[in-house]
Amino acid sequence: MFKSKPKHKISKTNKIRKDDTVKVITGKDKGKTGKVIRVLPRKGRVLVENINMIYKNMRKTKQHQQGGILRREGPIEITNLLVVCSKCGRSTRVGFTKLEDGRKVRTCKKCEEIMT
Ligand SMILES: [Zn+2]
Image (cartoon, rainbow, N blue to C red; front, side, top):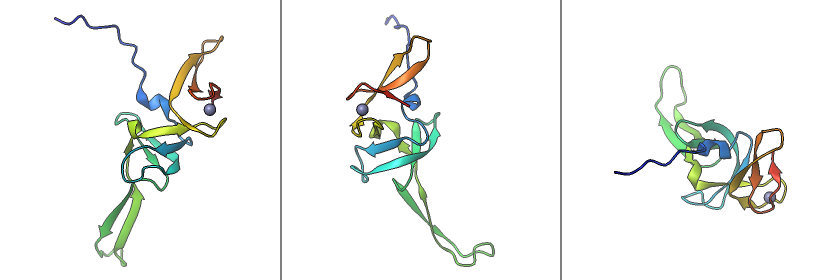
């Protein structure tokens, strides 16, 4: 029997927030950076502007006379992304630290500045 360790699990989604700039570290958009436009906390994924684009062929319907291709962002796993630090400009893993007033804030693991 395993003795279960106490869980201090920080939701992955806390590491990335809307309007963050992120860098893709794996997949077809590797190396690209973009702005987070939406976080999907339950799925552990985010939507990033112009990253992981999905093209969907639209059939001609009465509503869509032109048909054509619908282009939109597909969700990308948070583990495939690094946050670009607004202080040092480098892509980094995110740490957490507790301030004196008890607030938990994100920190850059490269320059150790607090990320807002
Ligand atoms: Zn930094």
